[in-house]
Image (cartoon, rainbow, N blue to C red):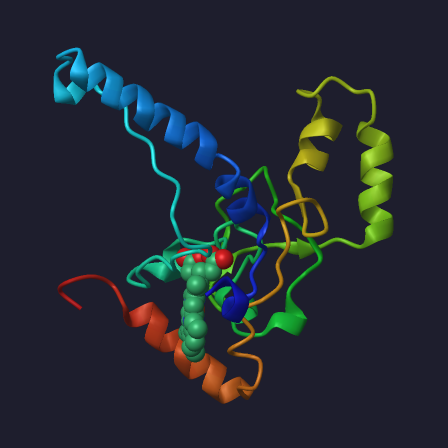
Length: 178
Ligand code: HEM
């Protein structure tokens, strides 16, 4: 699945590395069970056996931006149009829930690599609760580890009208009473 969808694999790879710890916890569970520990107190851990991510149900997806497992893509129209995904993007964190109902997702401003570097140099060495550090921390850099916005290119071949139609359909998915 990861091979087909091609979204950022880092999170999954990191999770797979926890398998020895999960096995260890389950071994401890068997020991505790043999000691007569009540089942509800026995720890259990599992790492998914197969690699990949499970897409959440798309009911209400219009309201759950940003998208993909790592929140790397701010709007539905860019989920369906990968060349238009911003490499670095900023929410207005003075209004962090601002929503764009046209593109459907987070209202955002694309940030250039030069602006990002300038923001980083302004924030360097400042206390993390300072305004400049907070401003810098609110930028999403898709080149950072685990933050990649690649993959899921299934909507790229659609024209604007087709993409809008799918977005309207996704907006209509609003639960059991839809
Ligand atoms: C036009 C067709 C498609 C639409 C409208 C669509 C829509 C979406 C949306 C909106 C998301 C983001 C969900 C979220 O983050 O809450 C998503 C994620 C996902 N979709 Fe699709 N999808 C389409 C085709 C496909 C196909 C063909 C596959 C599999 C071959 C697929 C597999 C996935 C997976 C695995 C994710 C989760 C990826 C991740 O979180 O990294 N999708 N899809």
